[in-house]
Length: 119
Image (cartoon, rainbow, N blue to C red):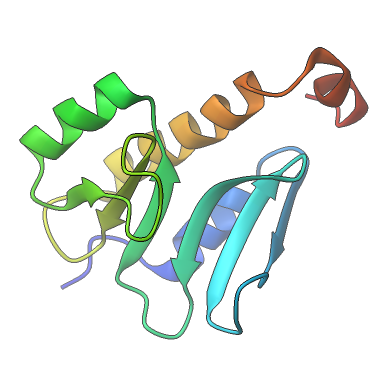
């Protein structure tokens, strides 16, 4: 049983300021970007979870605490986690991690870029 669904992730991503979604890799992998920078990735056809950016220290803690949080699949494992919708990650935690991912990316933008995108 899933603890969250693709549409919940999609809706949460699109509710944020300056977010676009696209399929830059293939027709299955949805990517959400804020001001042109990726903060979330999920497979739309075979949804099992979402990949989210995370600060390195928090990534380590989360991976130790939750079976459903692992190093990002095909991503920089220091900065990305794959968050499973099929194990022990509840929707409330998934929301927190998605918000954290968005904040990490926004925090890394230049002041000019933040102003241009209303962030």
